[in-house]
Every structure is written in C-alpha cells, then in structure tokens.
Image: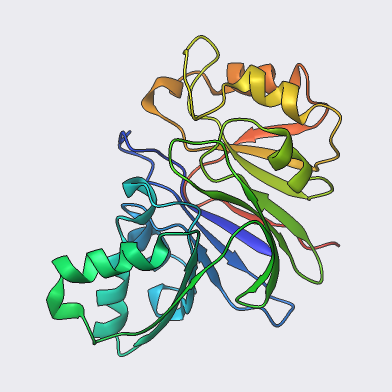
Length: 252
C-alpha cells in the first residue's frame, strides 16, 4: 500500500496546503486507486500524481464538511471532460443527500456521470478492493474514521475527530496513522485534538508512525513543538504531514 497526502490543510488556507485529501494505492495488489476526501485543491494535487483524476473510480468520504468535499463536483466535471463517466462515491449517512443537493445546484452535470452512491456506517466494508473498518468520530458533523487493509499493509485515517479511544483502537497495529491535529496545545478547541491530548489517547497503542494533518494556520512554526508534545506520552514516531508526501507502507 502507498499513501499520498494530497491535502494536509484545513478550512483556513495557509497558502501551501490544500484541504483534506488522500490517495491510496496498492501497487502490488488488486485494489484500485482510492481517493479519500476531496477538499479544495485536492483535484490539483491529484493531477500531479501518476493516477490523475482520470484514474480515480472510487471516492470515500469521512464526513461532509465543505473542506472535505468542495472539489467533488470539480472532479466529476474533469472526469466527464476526459471521457471517464463512471464513479463510485462511498461515505457516511447523508452522502446521497449531499450529492443530490450538488446536482440541484449544478443541474447541467446531472445525468452526465454514471454515479454510484453507497452509504456505510461503523463496521467492516470492502471499498475499491480494500478491506475497510469504520469507526464513528467525535466531531461537529457525523463522520467516520477508517482502517484500510491490503495484502501488505495497514493504514488508518482519523478524518476530523477529537482524540478518542475508538479511533486509537481502530489504528492498533497499523503501519501508519494519519490523525487530525489542528491546533497547538494552548488552543482551547472542541472537535479537533491538541497534540498533548492526542499523545495521551495513543499511549500504549502499537502504531508504527503517526502523521499529523488537518493543520490550521495556528500551527505554522510550531511543528517540532507539536510532535514533541505527542511523543511525550506516545512511544512512537510522530511527524507532520505535508502536501505531496508519499509514504510507502509495503512490508520490505
């Protein structure tokens, strides 16, 4: 499995981070390329990869906040213009209503895409050939965190969520966990974790590496401080994600 961070930013632009999006690939297996979330700028990040927007047949959404879905219609139109008219969109409750609403606004796109929509909840699913386990997040919108398994690796992604034991358990044994860590410790925030709280919750869990993502402008210049704060309680490798970073999880 290979994971590329297409967007590691948040709803407040920094100028060098797109909003949330991940590309998951399975170079040595049968699973297809999978786009996880599709915030503003993700389509541009995707165009820089070998997969491109033409190669995406499945999109998996963690939740429906605008910074996670705002490039969806742009993706649909780009694929239509490229002659790629099939797409599956998978996500939590409300995904079908979200797409219906978007087509109400962009009526000229209605019927141009052979669109399949599947809503899922906590539990086990198969998405784009990956075994996917979902757990509910703690956020201001209903959402799901995901654990992805292929023949050679395990990857977990929190989506937007406070640090919770259920997400930590979901990531148990993963080679990599990408986790929301939107603000430094002194910011009093709900719906997102601070580094200290994230480290406390991850403490005692076996996770190979943690990447901090969904970074607000408040984190600029504070990255070393934030990783140190997580590592004060969590005995593992903690790094800050960046746009364009590709991590190869395949067992050597």
